[in-house]
Length: 236
Image (cartoon, rainbow, N blue to C red; front, side):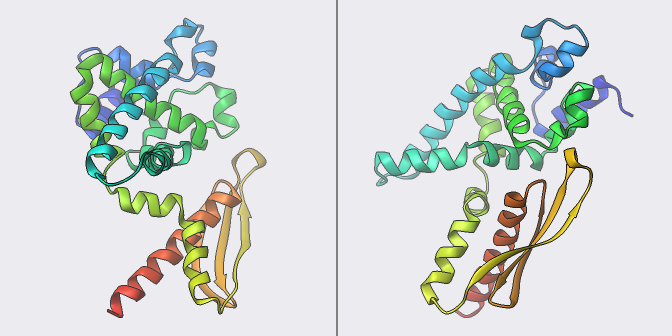
């Protein structure tokens, strides 16, 4: 198993930012359960950095949307920002860089599936943003957010809203019934994995796997949407 020093070096390589004060990055990865078990000062967990990172993320994403959508009204900008920086969206972005594998968790939190929980993973993502801001200023924090949160935005929004978008797409034709079917369930109670299939009447259109039924349904809907999109593009 890699030691913490190696893990911090590896993560910095992935995100393309080298910390002057590496202790800030370690703090951003430290859950309160780990701090309590190690009898570390409670203030050395990620919670204060998450508070700061949340504010930095809101500012950077607001400026980005304001500049990129010149004719979009305030209400729509607010809704779009909310979908981009909500808990599942940030967890989705964090998993792209496998941030969940670097989190320092207490044994109890680890045993109950904390490493796969969106709430923890998204908090750590915000804490890393806060740590970069303190260590390297707003420009470095902005670069991180642009690269790992605001990139491939269309695809990420499609993923986050896939169930709603798929339902809307199907209702345009109004000829078939969309349904989701749970086809598998594995793992212990604290670390379940669900397998779901999406059907249009009796035709399989997508499959998904997730830690919750809802997440698996979202993945199945996303796969179905990508297929429908490809089919529609091919017909042009």
